[in-house]
Amino acid sequence: MISGRSVRGGFLSAAMAGSLFLGATGCGGDGDGDGLPKDYKVVAGTQLCGGKAVSADASRALKVITGSSRFEASAKKYTIAQAAADLVWAFPGPTVMEDVCRVYKPIGTSDYDLRITWDLGDSAPTGISAPKYTVLKMGELAVAAADKAYVYFACQSDRFSSTAGTHIVIGVERWMMPKPPEGNVEALKDAYATVAHSFALAMAKELRCEKNGGLPERSVLDPA
Image (cartoon, rainbow, N blue to C red):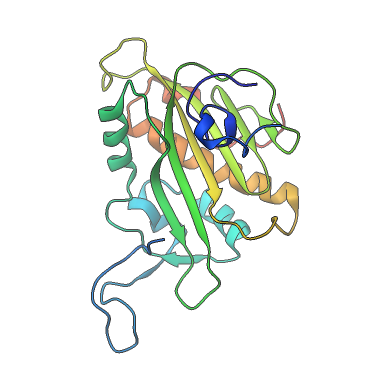
């Protein structure tokens, strides 16, 4: 088993066991004549989550995952800057999984809730992943399945009180999924890994992690 405390599905947090090992909408406000909130907007993937988290590659990956290239605009609280500030405030923990952002398809299309999260770990992950996960060469560890992915990285930064730095995990998962994922499993794994990498790299840069936490500029999708 991988040791530590903080990842969905048993990588780090017992409270989230069973996922990784052997609603609110983006906008609010009063409705107008068509029943939509007055500030309701639909945007491209690269404009989600404050505009700094979703790379062009990740935007294309979101289309693979959701079947859509347009999404509800994110709530103002969903930004990398805010998530990084929350993470620094929580350090050194303990923590529970917290949202970086939520991604929704536009009103009037099929329901889809993609959750991007952050958490802190005690140490680098160790152990063997469950068979459904492909292990990738990014950060301390990256794993991808057809409905979720996680990227772990170590961060030494002047934003943390300890010179030892910390271990961070970014997760991407379809929330409240009613049935197993459909489609090309390998393509879905690559897509989830690409989105997780994009958010992890954005977080590492926002936190001013040395050498971006060891993360490459583009996602590495070849199995480790």
